[in-house]
Amino acid sequence: MPDMHNIPEQVNEAKLRFGIVGTAPALIAAVERALKVAPIDLSVLVTGESGTGKEFFPKIIHQYSHRKHSKYIAVNCGAIPEGTIDSELFGHEKGAFTGAVATRKGYFEEADGGTIFLDEVAELPLTTQARLLRVLENGEFIKVGSSTVQKTNVRIVAATNVDMARAVADGRFREDLFYRLSTVSIIVPPLRDRGNDINLLARKFAADFAQKYRMPPVTLTDDAKRLLRAYRWPGNVRELKNVIDQVALFDAGENIDADMISAHLPRNVDYVPAVAKPEASYGRERDMLFGMILSLQHELQSLRERLDEVDRHHDSDLTSNASKTRDVISVNFKDDTPARSTSIVNIDETPVTYNDPQATLEETEKQTIHDALTRNGGRRKETARQLNISERTLYRKIKQFGLE
Image 1 (cartoon, rainbow, N blue to C red):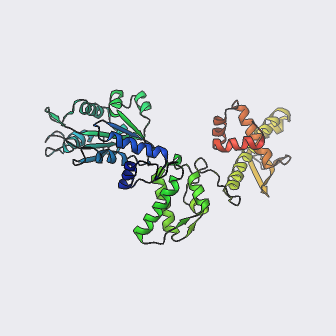
Image 2 (cartoon, rainbow, N blue to C red):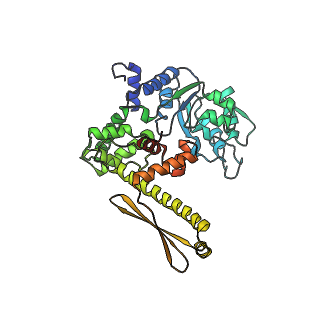
Image 3 (cartoon, rainbow, N blue to C red):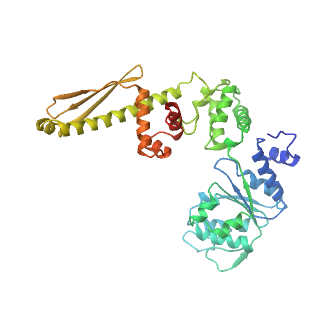
């Protein structure tokens, strides 16, 4: 991992200027790329997951270009209604549509000589994409309701969290516009791939919060730092800031451990791996609930099989009664082991009881997983979906029970 001494001086200067925290190689490479393309008037496409900080890069490009003294306008394309976005970008003439009481300049006219940042560019309607392509090709645009061609000299930097290749293949984005926008591409890494940057950011957010609201600062224990690095951060830097702000508020002045961090994270096993603390109870609780569900499923399957047996082998009177039954299933737990008794109650409330040998929770889970894998031909993804558990949990159970 690079340190401050190995990072180019201009990159450190840009990071300090725009408040960018981190030394992850992919982040440093992205900043370097932005600085190299800044003096050259090329269109740039910034890609990355939501919340990674893509908005910093068009600012870097603008401030390190010859346009830095001209206007910089950021436009969130996903926040403007489809019916008004052409007017917002290119302007309109008086009377062009209902409510157009005066002629209005659009962003491309306002930013002449400067830079326009089109955030969420993949959300643009196809008709607007055609207008944007014309601006990129020859700097021309026409206001809504006008027939006069106008010229503008703007640099366009766009950003998206959408898979643009798929959007083009699906017909949601013009291929020619995609190639025009992505003359140079900058990829912003997700937070989960930035290693120790997570802890650096957490420390900064905690300090900023304490200073801004004049509250006692928090400190993070080693196990809290390990948890922060293990979590996948689907919301990236934005989500990390949200979590740290909550911790800094509700646990002000405390020494924050992993359990205190966990209280502010989603309870989704697909996102949060097991914490390396033997005393934590979350894994055991999940396993117990999982076992209870599998046990109930197994009970229901056993009941169905017994009903079929009754229909095939008992006399006509019992068969007649069985055809009118309703099921009552009770599962009793003692010391985490299901003691199972199944009753079939007919319409005149006369119980017919079947005693089934007790099965341990582990045996029940193993058999249910084995049966599901067999039904799905060993396809683990489909098996996990049918059992309503994550693939990670299924893999762990397969290994635990020796079902590879």
